[in-house]
Image 1 (cartoon, rainbow, N blue to C red):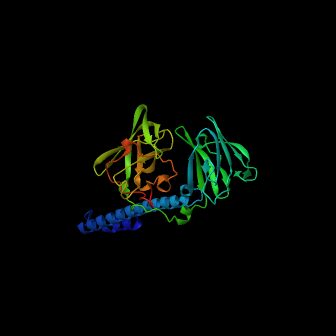
Image 2: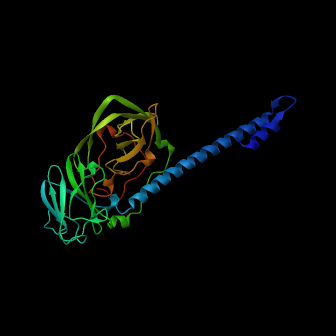
Image 3: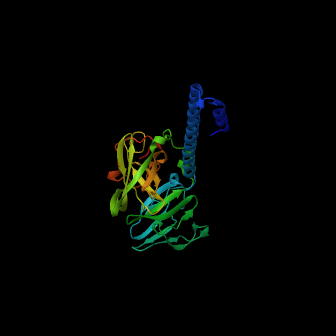
Length: 319
């Protein structure tokens, strides 16, 4: 408590009667209330600044030349020999004016993907020229990334299917991107949640933008309260790790937010099974930017019967 407040108490005490005057007690109550309000205002200001910085960092990451805004193609890989390049005669056609007519050939079997580059074409991986190599997909950690001019590509695996993901570091989306609007920041949307862990892990069906249904492990549910009503979400991830990943839908979807739902991370619970879900950090899936993303969508049990007016709003003319 400030020194001035202690001084006020000393002066206000009547030595003869041993009592505070009623007037001074009223003044003291006002000083304490003002001090408390100022403290709360400061805490709230710090919180708003923290979330604003989170949004600033999010926008900065999307402006990087290999962000989701750079997605330029998604090509399924069937087994066999698949040529690729800008010419329409190829099995996989890269964007015209971004590459040579034929860059090379993929050789795909059930266990691996190998690529051969045409002898006169320069393709690099980690700054080293490559002509013939086996490509490691993203399911095995960091994928093998190949580049030619402004194009970068690598192999991804989604629930047993393999694709070539193509990025264009000079994509027009990167130039036109000016940020994403978000709802006003409010602590109301930072909710305390109780983790109700199952006796043994269950499974959950997670639909994707590609029409697939993924099966993921589910260790429990998060239960929380908003405006006197109780809600539940099923988080993905192991509670023994640092974070849960939550894919959720709500009644703003298709209006002020993306129709395919949004994502948010939350710390895994403490020893009392408590964590916090901060919907002010809810963000759009990559599919809001490009038709070439493979986004997981909200499971049926994660569609909330409430309007979550927090976090990112919809972006552009998302598909």
